Length: 367
Image 1 (cartoon, rainbow, N blue to C red):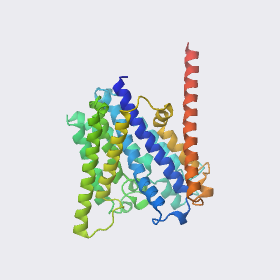
Image 2 (cartoon, rainbow, N blue to C red):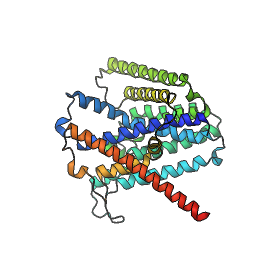
Image 3 (spheres, helix red, strand yellow):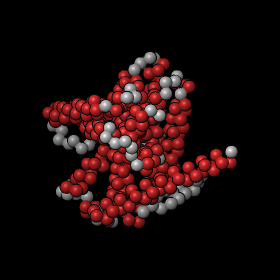
Image 4 (cartoon, rainbow, N blue to C red):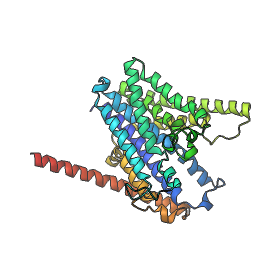
């Protein structure tokens, strides 16, 4: 790989590592922190709650950046691009794991004792479901852009706008009245989904814009101008956010902000772009990053699945949250988050060593 490519990998790995750290600490503290400490009168809780609100969109945005960069970095026709097949495979793997993590019974083929609440939990759309479909949408839109000779930027922008702005309509419809729960769950939060396609898929597709730009401009990330441009786009997004909010406030007397709405969508995008700007700027200052950071970036799915099982359990394994849910104070909750982060770093390092050992044994056998 070129040195430029190396720098860009540093930039992406820093963002993925940040997303993973935010995800683990957010889930852990939310699992263990007692209800008596969850008050907005506390500055500590306020700061944590605000940061946690950015975890999912950062994770989704970075997933879109990474996948689209790899997809578009190879200048091959759509059906000859190996990343298309890998993307479809990734979509299926993410979806299977997402449903297995929420499987409603330890009996694989006996659902006789599964009640309505358990079925709703099973069909809840979470981050893995969302990222899986986000990747699928990027593949489809990449094909459309190539077939009709349209710019990636145009197609991805339209795709992101579709999911962002259609949210205003889709969230007001009770889709469960028209569709089976497994499908309705993808369209709104009414069945209990955390991340329905509207508006959340828009963050993955927004990341595709940056991923496509990086693939088509392989040296851009190695300049300060790239960082400045990202920061400027972040500022523009924040200006749009507050303009929309002011307009809604004057038109409807709307006083809320920290709920899912168009203004908040642009606020999140603005902060995400500024974080990308910061990470790209940092990547210009360092020669290399610790191997464990790269390994974490390569194994985000593994980290997600393992830490979710540790905290929440599964149909076959109980999690710590089943025994200590909302029982700890602030210091102990933070300690639990730090311990889980350290454990996941160690686990990924062990996993990579085992993979390398197995690879060396296979090579030795072939020789």
